[in-house]
Image (cartoon, rainbow, N blue to C red; front, top):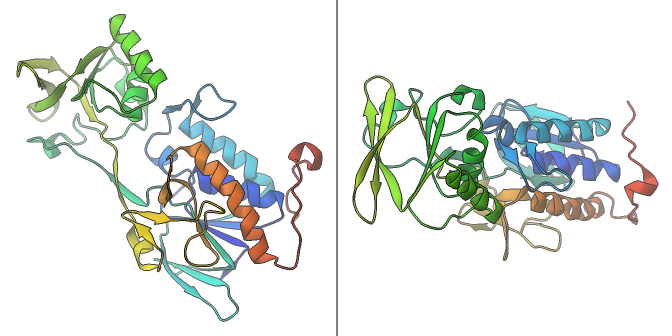
Length: 337
């Protein structure tokens, strides 16, 4: 049995940063994650994707951000249960929670912080004939290693941040990059949209808006795609070694649905005072929570974690008065032993 102050369900960037904020006020943390390594989506899906909105980093690769977070929390000696899914939660007579994984590992703590990102997730796939035939043979839904696409002809589909960011990044890697989006406007950051349009004007990216990929071509390996102009219905054939549809992830809460929490579709409703749920002692931070004005950004999750641990301290030590101390004054001292 593993005992700690805060059980963090989810070892993505927000879960990891929670360890740091909790450590500053001498709270110990143990993280549970179904993935075999810390980092969540940043490690599993796009470790080489550049992130542009982390304060102090004009650009940082997702995998490097996780490495930095792991270094930052090292003094606080967090525990990890990896490759196991938090399955059951029950409350003991002493007020502490017991979290048991699908492999039977038991964790006990007075506070639970759910930082599970989007929960269990799978990529949203376009409705195309032969799509599954080309999976791992020219169709990829995630990009783990951009070098795989070195000097290749790439067609990316999508209009969000992932499609824009990878178009920008792969313009310096692939021999040809085509971005296909069914609308004129994009959903991503305005700066990224501007960069893509500048690349298109410079002839480094083939940008096709109001268009969509309608056919995949090839024998055992993908050799090209058909792109249909949605206004004129003209069909253009494009040679492609890889087709990468980036339409986001379809979230699934999994066992969390059975934990008695107030839910809004696939998210957990919280109080923005401290990101507490309707169950005392259980909090939800990061992409998995929901409240009016919610923005699913890593930096917002960092903010939520910071406020959450202040409230958690009062749950864990109701007899003590917590005084905020700036790290510029107190420094960062870890745990001994």
